[in-house]
Length: 470
Image (tube, rainbow, N blue to C red; front, side):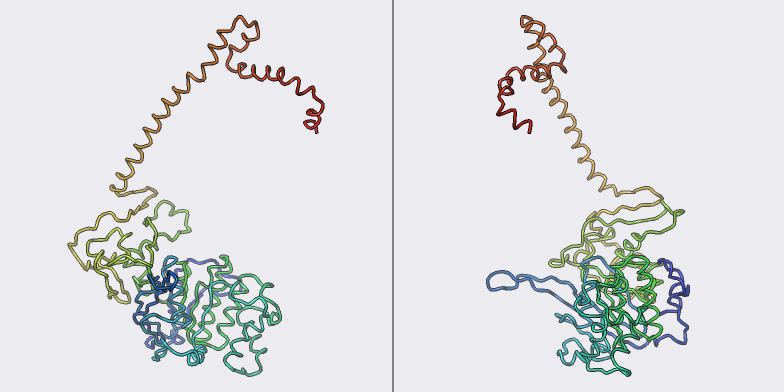
């Protein structure tokens, strides 16, 4: 991890007894930056959609559609993006928990894309995964000793001093007590269960660890503990991480480089400082503008861009740039030409025809029009594009006839309400009783007073009054 990591992070306070320079590593202890541990080229995963009696394929969910990146030894690559963009699928592909549809995955220069189960079993020592849910990833019927010791049994490895001693040492390394060896998962909190999952992943001393949302199911205070634990273990064991997360502050704290995914593709790949200071892709800019700033003095001074609409379906993704349906900079070429992932600057690659902080790749191209409304919040005021405001005018105007339509309805209801008045005035011959009905409010009570006279025989019947009394 880089020696500047942790300088300007926004993450919860650390627990007592831990140093404040979290993630800092002396230059002489850093892993060689030039060695490529993992290389991914054109990785594709399509899940077929089958229908009918013969289960014929009628389509495919394009979860991952052409990913290319590399991970250097000793670094941490963070992967961010909206839900459904293919992050977790990518993590399962590079660990070979899923079979790729296309592309290649190389680990330490060896192609592991289509290794057999037996050959891949030997690779499991070097490639491990931390799963997202600490509750469902642990077998509730097994003790912690059995869960953490399973990798030794599956790989036929007998550690020095025995499996039990090694498992207890792993538990102590991740911040648990060796006495937890004989306990069951339901006896632990969420943070402790995630630590158990980390201990299981580190049992065989792997070189690459893929962490799929390792802190998303934990509360904020436990998140800081687990993130700091991952940093400590990387410093101690020289691990290489691929961390998948939604929390941009966590990714900023732990990552050396960050890949931004959208609808199965990487739209930007840059080092941490460059991406947060000068994001190149409009989608990255929108993501970063959504990060809340915990500073009351800056309230109303943020410049936020709100993307309207949902992510398109991966079954039928848009042509050209997949973000053009929500992009405020989209042009006609964006709808037809897919932008390649090109080098925008030192340590920054962007897949965009019109990047935010960089030269325009297609200058003079005709604007596509307002395909996705964007709202900019600046200085506490809302600025909406004029086309979006014009689209709202008919909606406001449509309310006025509705309000006017209620007035005739009220007038039509007026004569109906006043009909009892002439009826009460037309009956002076009935005596003083109808005279009290001239007032509308008492007039409503007059029928109720007449009702007991008609119902008198019913109340006189003992059989009917008895059940009512009961």
